[in-house]
Image (cartoon, rainbow, N blue to C red; front, side, top):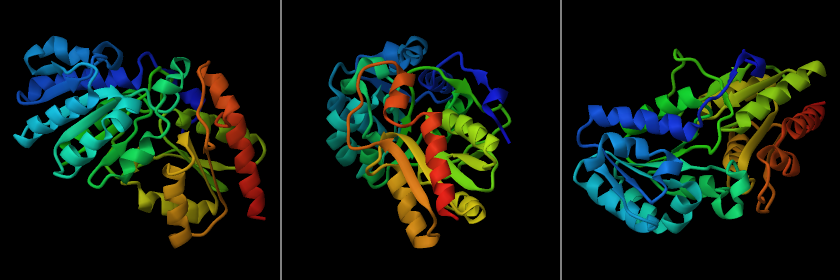
Length: 320
């Protein structure tokens, strides 16, 4: 069992941790190349560029062209990373991702920074709150979302070792470090970061920390909440989820994303087919977020620990 008091404030955002591991991998695989769309200092992909300038390509503010060029390199047998903000990768470049990467199932990995409204002060134009819906819909695409620096580094390796395209959702700011070096990660996996018996709370990325704090609040009310970090979103951990909800009999999914067509929709469909139980999901409710302080946005759009705890209490009450 873990609790937020057991973790440390992160010194670096997941986007940097991922890019630092990417730079290290560049010394291992001499054919590995990285493409970026003129924001290398923001995604931290520039770290790879400084170490391996001959294999680093700035394609300018032309995300579709960047993805198409990355697909060309991958078609020659190389492993490739294409990096940008999530909102641009999953919207401006969506046709190129679909047709030139996913259709031929090429080894292009997407460093997608600024997931959800973690770029809160940058406003809606830079907030990727529909990215999970867009990417999980594409055949052959795998989707993962690390919550901290250690999982970011280790999930880079998972992405590189996975055949075909992988979308990695990363965050703008540092929050907390939850995992230890001994922890392992794999495609289709998840991690129980707090054990419980009354309700299962599933989250990923930044919302994992809000969920852990909500579970601590619920404990004071006599409610034991299990918190799962569903770091592998597609494919998700079907066996792990089923084992948890068979024990708790209730499920709450919380995500920094639109409620519609996010992980909550996927897991509700799974429950309907395999284990009908009291269920709810929290996310943006058919609305854009706005520019402002990240933690204030969590409160406004119902994703803070207070809102999570409230929703969990209501679900537990439905169990009778």
